[in-house]
Image (tube, rainbow, N blue to C red):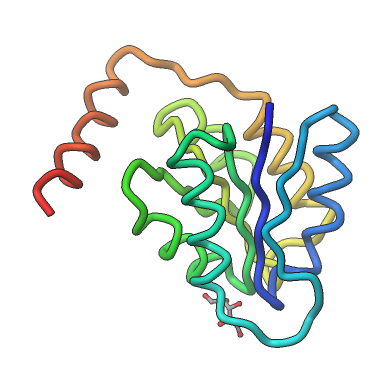
Length: 147
Ligand code: RB5
């Protein structure tokens, strides 16, 4: 398993904990930056992670900004991306089960690093349910194809 991670200055506070958690699980990481709390533009990092996932170069992605909102919007602009913004374990579990999300977004000004790790582990450990959800996910692709 290979996971791309990326953040802006507002999400940087979560990145080290997220990376440590992935390393402990033996997951290979592709770090797309940023690497400090200096102000940067979140769409750049959301797109970098999303492209790696969309091309199949990484299996999943984690993106983080201040709220998680901006970087998740950026990631979702890339075809094939299902990026879910989660602030708790319930939403992480449900998006893995129902949306088969391939990128997880979190907000560094919303959740603590400890909470982010709990959200991440829940997301990674919850399998996609398939069944009735497959058709709905195919409908995302139909929407993309109308563009
Ligand atoms: C940066 O100040 C902030 O706007 C960004 O991290 C994010 O919260 C945007 O949605």
